[in-house]
Length: 140
Image (tube, rainbow, N blue to C red; front, top):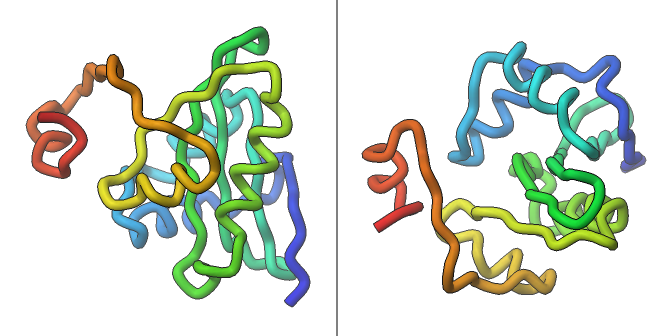
């Protein structure tokens, strides 16, 4: 295994990005939409084993003091080996001066708690598809 970190979006297989998000039960869209989102992000991290994309994550930020973590996923075959922690750690290192928020997929809160994230008592969301997000357990 030869796992490498890449930060740029050139040569990313956007179909694989969409597929990994889907297989993890996360929100996924057409590949071109993921490309647009990742390219517009403040920072992004891609993990490759040789030339196979095995995980990624990204953050939006004002670059001054606020940021939000999105789309962190590791291929099922590589989970449990510290790669998710590595992705989040790389992103947080680029945002060490920022408060960072996220919303985790239901059931994944423990992973982020181990990395120092804490539940917010005032967190709220305005989702485009409110009913779907409530069904998935994101809102009350």
